Length: 154
Image (tube, rainbow, N blue to C red; front, side, top):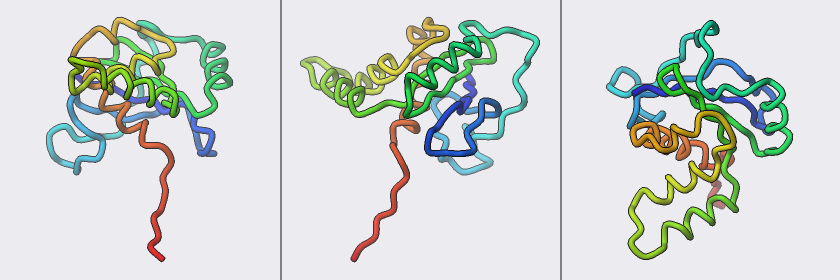
């Protein structure tokens, strides 16, 4: 299964855009080296002729950009369905961690809860598809890292 991440808005990046993206094989991380299985490559232009299941209007996307100032992004699954997610904040991270600490919790409950909490629109059936959820969890792991920082020992 392949997913295509579409970076949509990051208030800290003046070069934010609504097109482009990268294609990631399911179960791969975006930090793997080039040339191997599951590598990340620049995505080809998405087919504009076929509408994606769950595709939002420009007005909806504009509203989400205003509602979620930390940023939003979309993930296209197999060029057929699209889901829109917000960048997780501390509240979503805390709720997911609390959920994952309940009795009988499973190891991936944290990431699954985080993806569900950050889904803001699009094809929500992807949240129930096990293979799509695995890919969405990989994307969310990358997006939940926060801002880039530099550690300087003094």
